[in-house]
Amino acid sequence: MTDRGPVFDGVKIGRPATGALIDAGYRTLTDLPADLRDLLALHGVGPSAITRLTEARARESGPDSAPAPDPGADRKTRPTDTAAEAALAGVGDPRRRTDAEAVLAMMREVTGAEPVVWGSSIIGFGQQPYTTADGKEREWFAVGLAARKTALTLYGLTYYGSHTGILERLGPHTTGKGCLYIKRLDAINSEVLRDLIARSWSENHRPA
Image 1 (cartoon, one colour):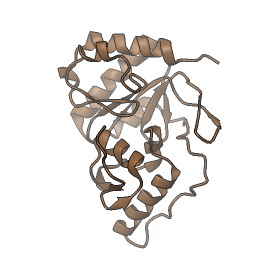
Image 2: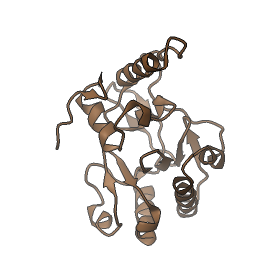
Image 3: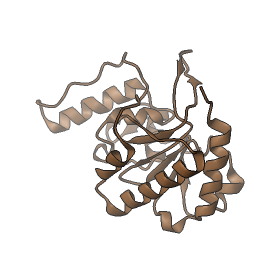
Image 4: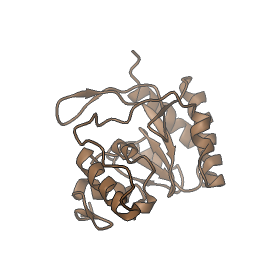
């Protein structure tokens, strides 16, 4: 695994967080989502990294910027009442928005579940409890997506090298820590993606 170093765009956030951001396609502070807490979905990114990135963004924006969040606050991105379609309506890139809407429809059809918007831009289906390093049990979703600036990010479809056989037939993509990144949906085998979603849903979803 390539050592990305502990510094992201001049901000020292540690090797795990830097690696997670770079693997997710981020290269500068301006590439990051408006709500930095969405980055907590990436394995390796914790509250301290979010605090430092927020402080760095505030320094770049000037003295009137919002203060950094409390690093002791709940680390998970919370579910909201925002409609999934409304969350995607704000995506600036028309192609990225269209691709995200197509994957949203596919996930809805395959899972039979209704989407929930987590934070400002992550759309999740189902639930998948997990335990963090501090021993606390958290709630998360089973599969999901987010229309990022650099790529369409899909969550829950691969973990640490899983589903390699299916991914080989998917088409152009990259993977990070727990995420699958797609630049263009029209370059992807849609039936393979559908199969991948179905398998991941079966493996991850834990009904209440």
